[in-house]
Image: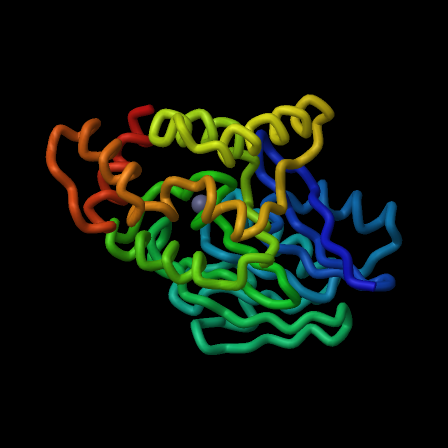
Length: 254
Ligand SMILES: [Zn+2]
């Protein structure tokens, strides 16, 4: 049976491992040693690496893992990915029969220009685009690109499980409460996340339903979110993109 497990890496990254019988695929293995240790102790063989974007904390383990397992490496066609064997872009569907997974590629530019996400089997691997109750920083793309990417992800089915690449949920909830102090779902989410982190458990995956109820960056069309962003920026913001831009800048300085 297919299962998806987190390997905590660096300070707050997760390397997600999709495994079935003795085969596995790793999403964004920034650290080869950590993953090798896991694969060996679980007696798993790595068949594929799925990269969302080119940052070192996501691709740092690629070459060592490829040398060891001769695994396929999927990644954004538009970025320089170490050891890339299968360039991927929106519209592509990739099949990993060894672990029983089929995944559709979505272009999600903003954090980086070529950033992609993988969606299938009710799971979304969204890298540094969507986070628990937040979103990635806009490094290479434009605010409009990031906003459009998040909109695209937010329209996937509500029960989609969201596997983000970082454990940022509590800090993001702290910000979200500034934006929407009266959001009840947010308060419930905070209590749950605090409980999980106290036990050193991941707050992820979340679901798109939860994100749509609590993540301010997916709620730019909601009047009270727009009002909070307008108040903070000192201008009257109307379009969801203007609201998103103001929220992202507010969060950058938060
Ligand atoms: Zn990144």
